[in-house]
Amino acid sequence: MIRLISCLALVVVISAVSCYRERVSEREPIHINPSMDSQPKNKPQSSSAFFADGAAMRRPVEGAVAKGDLREDEIYYTGKDPSGIFVAPSPLPMTRELMRRGRERFNIYCAPCHSRVGDGRGIMIEYKYVPPPTFHQERILQMPDGQIFDVITNGVRNMPSYRHQIPAPDRWAIISYLRALQRSQNATAGDVPPGILDSIR
Image (tube, rainbow, N blue to C red; front, side, top):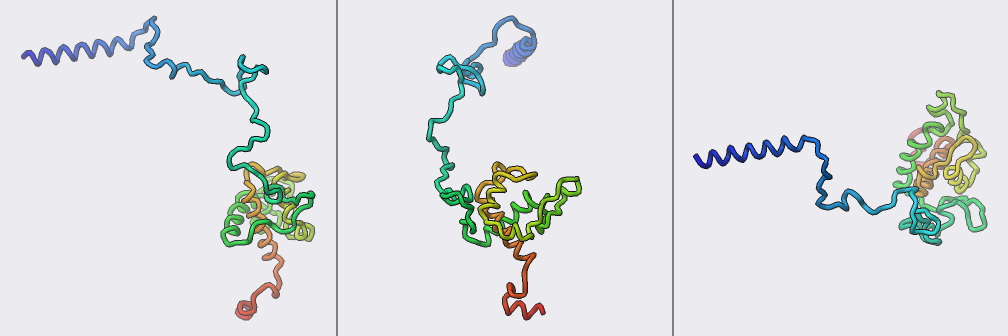
């Protein structure tokens, strides 16, 4: 009997406390750890009396380089040699994996305008975009790889820059695939190995 009365009393107390929590109170809430509610921090673009210029946001130390962002290889990151001339061949060795990556990135970023065969008749042309040039014209066939890298990086005429969407290694991969695409669209019988040529004649 005593146990039953104790249980009922406990239920009444819990119910009363839970109902009380819904009532409006003029008191400040209890903060067991107040630093979680009021953190000493500076938000972007906020001011700060600590620095002489009054800005909370600070410029990086001059000469500082973010981890993984050191760009010592000028050719790899600009497509130009130290004298500013566009390099003819890509600095990356041609591999199957590079070609596979280049095809994937080309189909994502380039094909909507240039089409998957590079003839400049991508799906965007149906939406009244200015047609880009075909990759199979002589001017682009003779263009150095470094110049194509520069165009992807900085854009040209109606083409915007893709420096933020496509990292440097993917730009070179796209160029490698583009060269294979150009060769496939301008291939001759001399490009086919003799054993294979005999089987397709």
